[in-house]
Image (cartoon, rainbow, N blue to C red; front, top):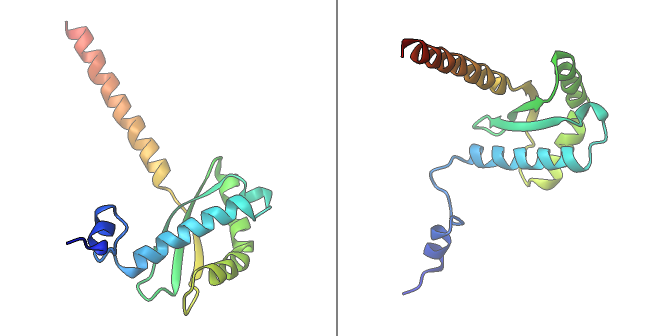
Length: 139
């Protein structure tokens, strides 16, 4: 017998009981803020800003928004300042789009994971170059 719920689950559209609500809402907030930055925010300081991830408290009242920006430290600070100024606009947009009892308080944090990944890749490349150099000199 055909069950539409099973069909939806098989293509990945069914309910995801293994994910907490805060994780699902955080993903929706990340998507909305990313689209908002692309389409409606006109601040030139936010032109190169990307939202990398969102961490939401279990009570859904506080959201920590991790952002990345291409550039140096001054551009990071400038982007954070621009995001702080646009915080009210972004929060009101989320209130309109995401139907929730409370719209979470937004806190913007620069995401340093990308820098850490680049540093780790550089370190691994140096190790690989040293090992490659040892093999050539030993032959």
